Length: 317
View 1 (cartoon, rainbow, N blue to C red):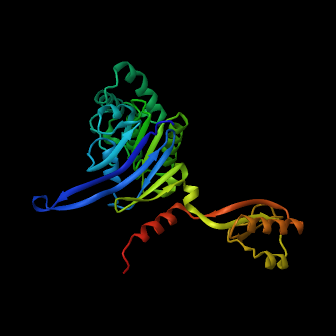
View 2 (tube, rainbow, N blue to C red):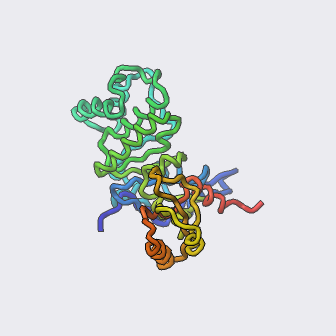
View 3 (cartoon, rainbow, N blue to C red):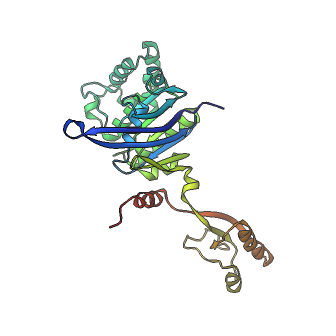
């Protein structure tokens, strides 16, 4: 079996607080998850859920109280595990007096990227993130979107196999968000793994293959977006018009979704308790010479699903 890019098992972290450290706060409580190579994985959760603590443990910045965390089979506590990663933190800061090119060379030196490699990769990365024409511009003049793109270039300097991105599109305009999103997808297509921590759920929904939701230090949901957001046993059918009598017989109803552009097609909603029940509806439609264009399981937005999950953990008022 191939080694996972990230493997976390029964991970816990307790912080001591208060006078003389007599009080404790459980930031993580028995977290287990795996991220396979080549995935874009989204870590979600409300403020205080434990996301930052988990990322810090994976980066070797914080040691867990219990459990294990591994990157490509190597303990996250070992410096060797960090040789294959890139990291873009939230609200990163670069020295304003440096140019974009100087910034990348400085951070490349700190990451032990050789001079020959930097000479090749720095101009390529600046071009890739759309900053080639600003390579000699001082960073203090950069907009938030430009700083985010420069930060992403910095995270890619060592050609990482695993990329950690913390709120990469925060404060970035729609054009910049699309550019960053395209870069993340390119990373995945090249075989890299991306670990994304973001509150912009619409962006997560566009790129992530798997997500986990943390709440009160525990993983409360984990799976694909399609699995988690599906509304069980509800489907939208695009068909030729259905008579009122057949609608009554099958239990179909008009869908609130917009009708297709083709004038001969309509959208209907089907509620079926199981697969045989759905197929029975389809058989009745075919018997009545209704032509079926498509069948789509109904899904909620990731934002609606996330809010429902978070609300489940709130104490009753």
